[in-house]
Image: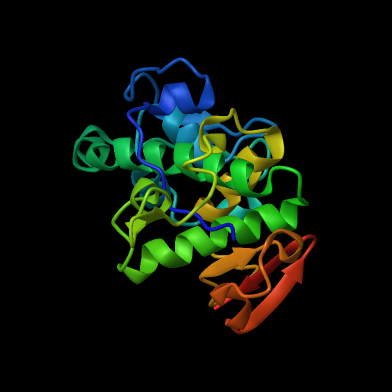
Length: 210
């Protein structure tokens, strides 16, 4: 059985994206470049995603066009929003790692679905307040995701896992609505309780269920 919990780390946004932090108030606008997303821009500028979205209400994060000129938040907005930066960066960091550890060799669709399971657990409020809480939860003396005790959770995420994590946290798309567990039938005992859960979808080698 392979499940996940949200990661919490001590990494800054600059560490997550490998970008040098720039002063939040060095400019009043920024132009979208190839490969950019609101998430990447916000963390490269040292501001929160929420504050950047609030400053650009007409921009659709899922359809961000190259060449779009974005307004940067004012000083007052940034001061109010910066408290969210650390948690956002940590959530992204651990989401990348859990997706990679549980589905690094699967399709992007399956990787996003794994992230959706983690997000469902986070949003339920029953598994903790951060991705780290979800990923590292211990229930009945056991970690909920096998990649934690076996150490795979600490491997460097591949490129598709990073893309999948960003998609999960940035958009409202949901590959497996209502799924709280996933498992690989080839690696799961026939007697395992997870096989009795209602199946929502099978994507690649992974079955997603309630």
